[in-house]
Amino acid sequence: MTNGYLFAAYAATWIIHIAYLGTIVSRYSRLKREIGELKKPAVTSSVSSLRS
Amino acid sequence: MKRVFPILSVLTATLLIYALYQALVVAPTEQTMGDVQRIFYYHVPSAWTAFILFFVNFGASILYLIKRRPAADMVALVSAEVGVVFLLVNLVTGPIWARPVWGIWWTWDWRLTSTLVTWLIYVSYLMLRRFSSGGQTPTLAAALAVLGALCIPFVYFSIWFFRTQHPQPVIGGDGSIDPRMMHALLINWLAFVCFAFMVCWSRYRLEKLQRDVNQAYAMASLLAPHGSARR
Amino acid sequence: MIAPTGITRVTLLKDLRLEWRSKDAINSMLFFSLLVVVVFSFSFDPTAEESRQIAGGLIWVAFLFAAVVALNQTWAREIRNQVLDAYRISPAPANSLFMAKTLGNFIFVSVLEALMTPLFIMFYRLRSLGPAWQLLLIAVLGTWALVVNGTFFAAMSLRTRSREIMLPLLLFPISIPALLAMVQATADILNGEGARFWIVLLATYDLVFTTVCLLLFETVLNAE
View 1 (cartoon, each protein chain N blue to C red):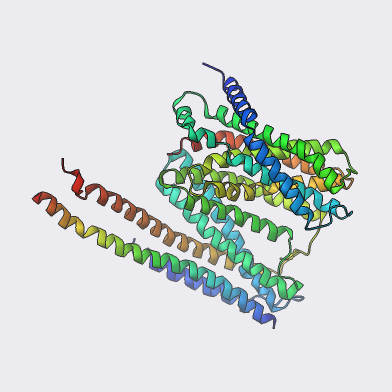
View 2: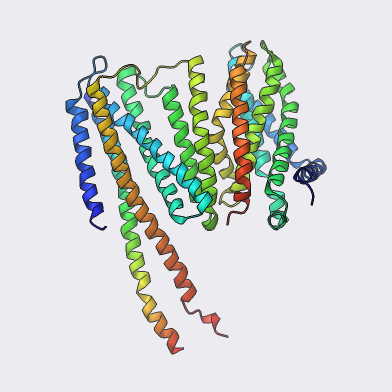
C-alpha cells in the first residue's frame, strides 16, 4: 500500500518534467514554422517594391 | 556543436536511469518508514537542484544589471523557470511522502513552509516577466531577482525560529544517514543537475528562437511597403 | 545645486500638502481598515481569550491591505502629470525621490495605524500583558519594511499590465519574513513575552532592503 505512494511520487515527478519539456518542444516547433513563413514573403515584397 | 546536445541528452538519460536503480533497488529499505522513504531520493535532490538554479538566476541578474548583456537576461529567465519546475516537484512529492508516514498531507513545518515561500517568490518573478512590457522587462526582473534572492535567507531563518517556538511535525527527517543511502542521494542529485542543465539548454534555445522571431517580425513591419507611405 | 536631503524634504512636503488638501488616500485607507475589522469579527469571537493569539495576525493583515491601497496610488499623481519624465531629465538623484515617496507612505500608514489601533483595542478587547513599548518599535520597523518594499514595487508595477494586481503579487511573498516577525512579535507581546528576536530580525530586514532598494531605484526608474 505504501508502494502506491512511492509510485505516485515518482510518477508525479516525471509527469511534471515531461509536461514542461512538452511545452518547450511544441513552442519550438511552432516558432520554427513561423520563422520559415516569415522568411518567404521577403523575396516577393522586395520584388513588388522594385516595381513601384 | 550540433551533435553535443543529443549525445549529452543520452548520457543524462542513462545517468537518470542508473540513479533510479540506485534509489529503488540498491539503497537499503528504511527501518521505520519502509519503501515509501525512497521518495526522499527524488524529493531532496529536486530542492537542491532548484536552489542551484536560483543561485544562477541571482548571478545572471547581477551580471545583467552591470553589463546589460541579453544572454545574461536569458540565462536569468531560463534558470528561474526551470528552478520553479524543480521546486514544484519537491513541493508535490513532499505531501505524497507525508501522507502515508505521518497521516497528514501538509504541515506548516520549517522546510515545507520555507520552500513554499521561496517558490512563491520565484513565481512572482516569472509573473513580472510575463506582465511587463518589452524593453524594461530585463531590468525590472533583474532588480526583483536580487531582492528575492536576498530575501531567501530571511525566509528560512524567520520560519525556523517560528517553528522552534511553535513546533509542527517535521517532514524529511533528520539524523544520521546510512552511507548507501547517502550514495543513492548524491547520485540522484548529480543526475538531476545534469538533467536540469539539459532542460535549461533546451529552454535557452527556445528563448533565443523566440527573440529571433520577434526581431524578424519587427524587421518585416519596418520593411513592408505600406500603401500610405507613398508621398 | 540643492542637496539631496533638500530635494527629499521638498518632495515630501509637497506630497503631504497635496494629501492634506484632498485626503484621498487616508480616507480610503481608514474606511478599508474599518471594513476589514468588521468582516474579520464575523469569522471568530473577537472577545474570547483565544483571540489574543490571532489578534496580532489580524491587525497586521488589515494594515497590510490598507498599505496596499496607499501604495497603489503612490506614483499615480506623478504619472498623470508627467512628473516622472521631468524627474528623469533633471539632475536630481533618483534616491531623493524614492526616500520622499517612502517617507510619505510611511507617514500615511503610520497615521492610519495610530487611528485604527484604539478601534482594534476596543472591538477586540485587547490588553497587552507584555512590554507595550516594544509594540511601538515593532509597528515602526514593520511599517517601514512594508512601505520601503511597497514603494519600490509600486514603481516597478508602473510599467506592467494590471498594475494594481502586480503590486501585491510582488510585495506579499517578499514581505513574508517581515510579516511573520510583526505578527509573531505582536502575539508574543500581547501574551506577555518579549519579542527581542523579532525586533532584531525586522531591524536587519529593514537595513538590508532599504539599502538594496536605494541602490536599485535609479536603475528601475530609468529602465528602458
